[in-house]
Length: 178
Image (cartoon, rainbow, N blue to C red):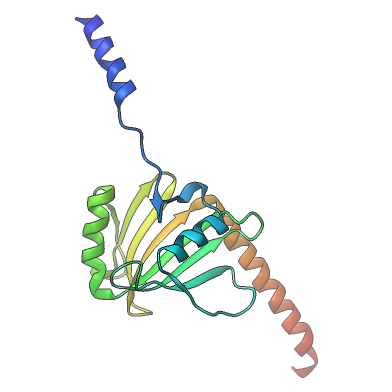
């Protein structure tokens, strides 16, 4: 009996489905680089939107990519170009619809309470990427966000350093005026 159990376990391990990489637009997010993801997003129908110089993210019109969305943000680490985040702004009435789609694809989410009942965070973790779905009352929208932890931390650090540097330069220029 134990021999049969051992064989069954071995076969189950050999033929068990491998955990698939989290892919969007046919690109593995955990391994994605700026050029690869940018090309895939453009090929899927995203339209680049103009933005100021030196932004740490790219912005696209996304209505052709995902029903109910209007803007897509892509963030990459400035030094290596690794994927850090992808975020859709969705119409607020699409939150329940999007949650159902994500639950069908990734399973039931973990729920974290928000300030109100309606802004709770729906959280999935897939292939090292966190997926967040939450209503954002500041913009009267919902946000669907894919986050890569380590690259995002690097991007945030670079953003903080940049803000501090800009603030110091600004203060230096204006210091005689106050």
